[in-house]
Length: 603
Image (cartoon, rainbow, N blue to C red; front, side, top):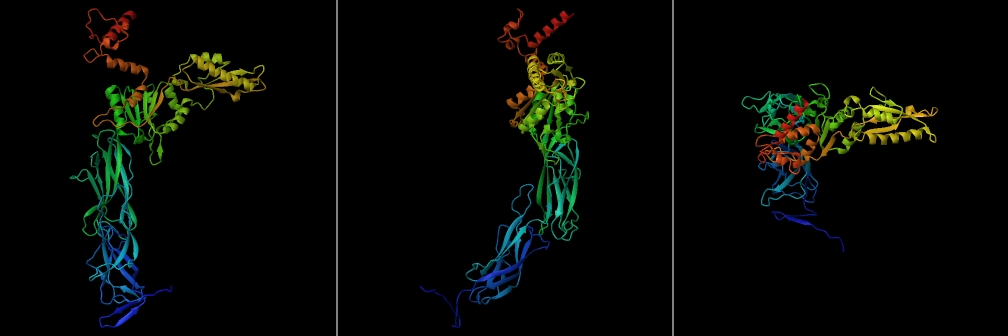
């Protein structure tokens, strides 16, 4: 059918009539936003102003002449409109007419109602919208009226994450710093234009540290008030502290750094940003007179795992343990000897925690990446046992271990090298050497090869290298060798060649790895899991294990182990005296008697 139409007829109080093609439609054209202190920042605690409001009637009839329409800012999570201060919209706005609304609207930016996550900064985008509400009788908003302006709610000052060490030693005096920025258009601080108190507060809730600038009545807090920080500028603050000597080694200390700013209305000091600095409190390395173990840790080694190993080695095995922290030194250089710290533990046991760790703002590193494979291979060859515990990058460790097993890349003959006529004489010479002698320096050996009757020189050399490998494995099964052709010795015209034999780390050497994190102990204990304890004890030399065994069971008092118990099943090895009461003789009595007999025979 034909298009329909509608008309609106208005009957006025004087009975006059007017007809319009459509209703009025009031819409916001624009409005401006300004913050209360005009520093360019919409800060919690201050008011935001809406002014220069302009409204258009895009409908087909004038707006009401007798009804009052009030404007307000719409409330949000952060914005609380001041309802007692509305502005009134001009009346009888004609179709197509734009009018300026006199007055200013205000809304309070609420303060944060909950604590932010540590390290986060308030950056909240919010929309400011205007409402037009019939003031009389209806008291409801006019639809499709609101304009929209987006604002960013934040604080005028902010705090960069502080720069600090993630590992400190007991007794150390440390300095760290942080930077405060003023992002506003006005100066802050007690001497600034706005007279707003600005400060940083450093707190030590566990009292692990001695703060240099702490107040006498609050030794766990140090507050730095900023006299003035200029607009769009930054200021750096330094703070010194020392680690209390009474702090338990390998515990976690943390400091809290807060940025404080007075409320723009009440003046009350409030925390606007917070950072926490977690640090490992390490012990100080010292070289024991006769250590059995060296434990190498880093800042990311779990403290509970370190205490489990301390409890096992010092309190259960009753032997000496030295602890070296890579995150304090950045290398394996010993502060005592100024050499690789592992050299002081040649022939002993070394435990290196295999977790990666942050390396002084240069990314993460694996602990073995700081070790020279050549020198480590020499120590292992000399009888040093190395355990990489709780390894997180096993493939990376395998690659490094290959270089440590055969670290001889230079095939130049040295002082300890043997150069013989054939492989038989070379094997004879090698049998006279000690496979664990560090002085051998992984020597490279050679023997000559003459061309075979029906073979080329190269095929004869290759066959000789394969034969040498089999002969070495047969005659020296616990040592490790590789045999390759000597390209420099190959002389086709003279029908001669040579084979290079390189000795690596013996098969009896101990360089082992464990994977998986150390599980937490029951609260109040430092008990280590059987899995981890096995690896720790496995890297002990056999002589040390034997000595520990007899020390543990060989006690002549009531806590000792009776001979009848120890020799259960092999009673023929023990002949009890006729007058001995069952279970009375202890193992150390038997050992002492044997030693006395031997000494008499030696005399």
